[in-house]
Image (cartoon, rainbow, N blue to C red; front, side):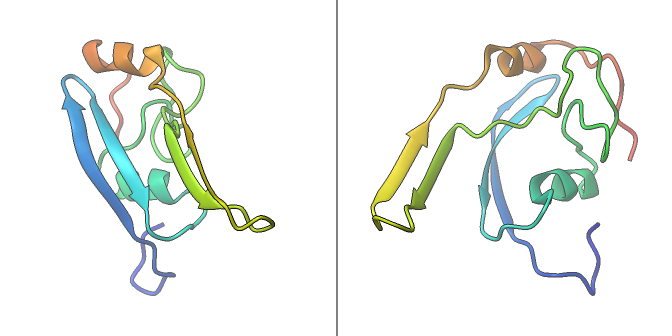
Length: 105
């Protein structure tokens, strides 16, 4: 939960596409458990298909959350590692479809 006496958690985001649903680019500045899911649910915009912080959705069996770019330093070699993936086609489809279940938070 987001709470005044909770641990600090910082998330930066920007809207990439906004239609029926919204695609956002998220950057974690801290690493808390469920950070993205909790922050967006607290803003009234839970992830599609998030059964814990939102509602399940028949179109997707898991929360609509995907890492498309990861950057980190390998703790053994100390080399900077970057990995990239394209956005899943299902996520682009979700942008154009009306939600089957409206989230209520």
